[in-house]
Length: 87
Image (cartoon, rainbow, N blue to C red; front, side, top):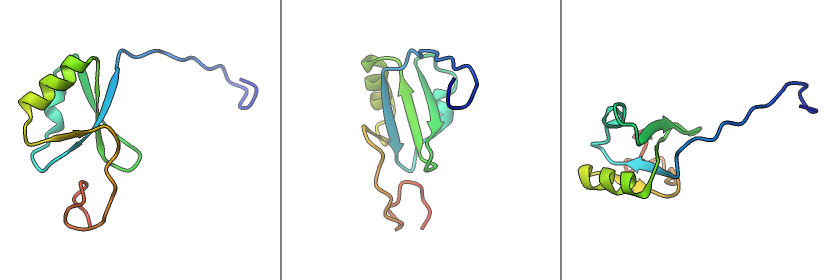
C-alpha cells in the first residue's frame, strides 16, 4: 500500500503447473471448457496453459500429441520456426 497508496489483495489460484504450448495444431478452445486448466497469453503473445495438477498436464499431453508443452517460454527466433508464427 505504501508505494501506490492502494490496498492490495492476493488471491491464491489452484494452478500448480504452467506450460507454453507450441505447435501448429494448438487450439486454445480445447482448454476453454475444462476446469483443470486455463489457456492465457503471456507478455510476448505466446500461449501458456495453467494446469491444476500433474495429472491434468499429462492428460493434455496425451490428448494433444502434436503439441509440445514446454516448462519455459520458447526462444523467439523470428524465422519460420518461430512458435508465434511471425517473422
